[in-house]
Length: 101
Image (cartoon, rainbow, N blue to C red; front, side, top):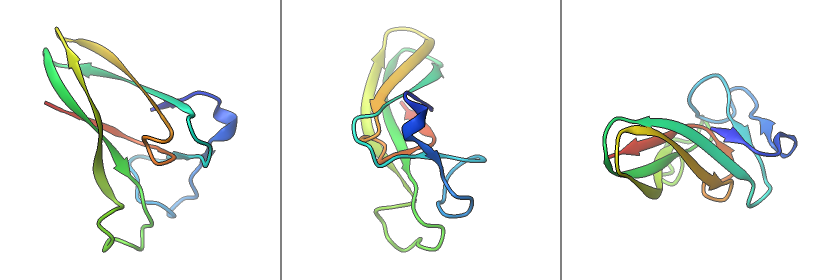
């Protein structure tokens, strides 16, 4: 996931949130633009999910540390798709996106 205006995003403190990879970016600003390029293997409608990162110490709350649907996209052929969204859709945490057909 790429962010616009990197100055309003900061790296998450290591081991503070459960996220994928080496780091994730967080912001408390609303309506900040984010995007991601993803290669979609075939035409069709895909549901888009974001990882709702939460505390590494809190796995009992079912509102965090889970995948949350944030929209859908329909493509007419196999191609690389550029998804665009906002920090609001991602709960202020830019981490991984999941596209499911």
